[in-house]
Amino acid sequence: MRSAAGPEWWTAIPPLRVSHLAGVDPELLRLALDPLPPSAPAVLAYRPGRGLSLDGLVTAVLDELEGAARALLPRWLPDADRLDGNGPLGRAAVRGLAARLAARSDHFGPFLADLAERARHDRGAAGDAVRARGDREAAGDAGRARRRSRFPAEVRAAGLSRVLADAYGRDAVALLIESPQVAGPEDERILVAAAEWLAQHGRCAVWIAGPLRPGIDRVRPVRLTLPAHLTELAEGSRRVSGSVGGPVGAGLAYPPLAGTPRSDSAAEQALERALAPHDWARGRRWNHVHEWHPLGRSYRLDLFWALEGLAVEVDGPEHRGAMMFADDRRRDVQLQLLGLDVLRFTNEQVLADVQAVARSIRELLARRRAAGAHPPQE
Image (cartoon, rainbow, N blue to C red; front, side, top):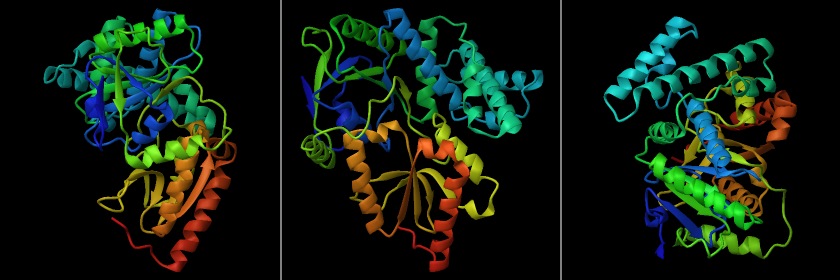
């Protein structure tokens, strides 16, 4: 059994194979990976649904990974953001970019070109919907317009692993799969078999977190010692009875990219559309990593005005978990001690009345500006 302590705890986990991260709560792992450490692989977290066959689970994971890759264009295809239009000329241009990238890399050209073309189609469909309605329903339009890749599952797994690593500027990808708390023996067998298939064909590491029966002995357990502030948080949370919120649904979560709202968050996308037309909202930074001290913990801020010292957090359902809820309170205190104001909104608040949320941000920004600029901490 391998184990590791210290800031680079992920180096103890073997690459290109399935490992069981024994004794570590999946929620704590998500906190340990936010913000994504610079030297870590690109880690995407998947919560499986119930009652899926082996083929069904593999297909569901690949569909989710492809959705992430398509949403992350143009980060993995340089210059794709400079192309206009979704007609024949635009499709030919994006396929040409993909072909040139494949020629100088280990990407499979036909898969890359097809993925890029369909990602461009997603963008066009979403943009048309926003222009037509300008509301939160637009977030789902691109997903409804998708068609499944024509390539075999093995080609998709290998191609998506490379694309997602490129999107985050990393050498490798790790897929964190959360084992359900009440999974039966058959569910566990299918989960492990799917994880092995993905590791083999995706050429990536697959981390299983959560309970796993000892009888599944072909999965190597790895004991991790996470940073002290997280282990202290876990111990404190266990002493508090009850739960802050309900379970988070099945699906994929992937790290945000600095400078843009999360592509998998309809709430962040809606808030950006509400802020974009206004001069008073200038200077905002989406998903900014705030490093306030060389020895201090870094914080990823959903939305940040550095000059005014205002952080805005948009909380999805995962923030109702006991440890994440406690960590949010702890970091709010630390940010306030640094002189920042922190506004928190739930996804539901943003999507129900995004203009009211924007007004609240504007009012606090105005007060901060009237009081004088906040000296940057970085």
